[in-house]
Amino acid sequence: MENYTYNSLTLQLEGLRVTKTNKYPLFIFLLLAYAFILITNVGIVVLIWTERSLHQPMYLLFCNLSINDVMGNSLLVPRLLADLLVPPSERLIHYYECLMQAFTTHMFSTNAHTVLMIMAFDRYVAISNPLRYAAIMNNKMLMKLTASAWGVALVLVGVLLGLTIRLNRCRTLIMNPYCDNASLFKLSCESVFINNVYGLTFTVVLLTCSISSIIVTYFKITVACLTSKSKSLNSKALKTCSTHLCLYLIMLVSGLILITLHRFPQYTEYRKISAILFNVVPGSLNPVIYGLQSQEIHKCLSKIFHLKKGTPSL
Image 1 (cartoon, rainbow, N blue to C red):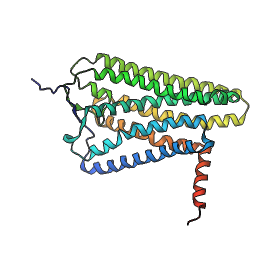
Image 2: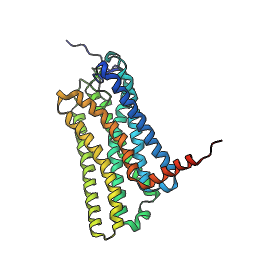
Image 3: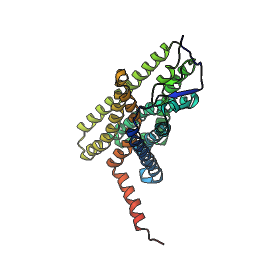
Image 4: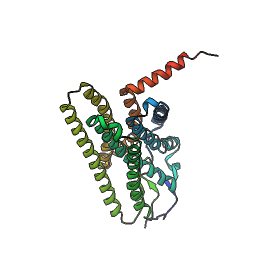
């Protein structure tokens, strides 16, 4: 009969299976990627909050995405870096730390959808109703949109993990490079039918609402551009909407690749790598794409660097 350890507070992470020759290049890549994510996302948030010219709904809403990228990667990448340097048998994690990592992981992915949805609404109002944009997208509306994006994600993820916490655990091995809900409820020997049903419903509803809102929003934006004779409006729509759509597609494709690989157990290592890249790639590209497309951010950065260059040395 197989021996089980019930409700152990010490769990073991399977982690990535890497050779000695690949371990250090991967470590350097993840370290540089994490440093880049921190510098660029924190830099953009600080720039937007300190420059009054950037106190516009579009940029203030984007701060949510940068904060989400920093939060999601900060509880994932440092732990991955530490695990790369130790043997698989020593990759131990406390149950409560594992829960926190799972909570952050699912908040990161859910927030990515909800934040991009409210950003799509902002672009729709700006292009379809430019004369009333300032009145509609006031500070009160920004607070409501931000609270709804984070609040919906908090409730959905809270229920998701609440269903898992109630289960007794009889295993200790996390079959993943980091903790997530599926890895946690697979530690149980009890029925996980409710967890599977809610997890599937959670994913389907979130993706359906997210994709539908983007399709409807961009359809209305396209109609507004086609019926408008203003070249400046169409030019503004092309720049701001192409940036937002690019961010959304990067997040969506990264997530769909991960979901697809879950259906093919023979590609376990590829699934693990894609799970890590799902956090790292959007977090690295979001500030770069947004910064490159925004003339206002370009102007603020140019002004800051110009002032630094022009400051006389003492």
